[in-house]
Image (tube, rainbow, N blue to C red; front, side, top):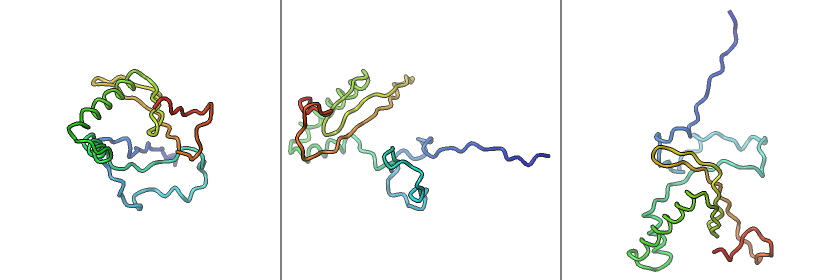
Amino acid sequence: MSNTVKPTKLKSVTSKPDAAPNVQASKSAAAMPDTSASNTHNPDGPRSVIVGPVMRKKELIDIVVERSGVKKKDAKPVVEAMLEVLGEALGDNRELNLLPMGKFKVVNEKDLGNGKMMRVKVRQVTPSDKPNTIGSDTDESDV
């Protein structure tokens, strides 16, 4: 009889979306694997992100009302129209350059029965004290 061990396939925790749809970032550090001791990762490469709480449309409208000082009845249709326009633009595979939020580009998409799933690359530019130079990737005239 052979003493070989059959490899088993590990399941990813993130592959179960219905297990915890609104996971808070307050999970204990003991539950998270410690990757800081490993020096094998590229410091300039992508890094894992701890998912924070989900922002819903109601919260977005409330924050817009608070920051802008306009009435909620005036802000709500504007926010809803803006979200609709942004959703349509992403659905048409348009690249969005919306500073300071960032630059959005649809990387790939998959048609589903009730809509489509898109993978979107978002690039946020860190604000700097320097004025934009000619030939800069971020163009404030698009704002």
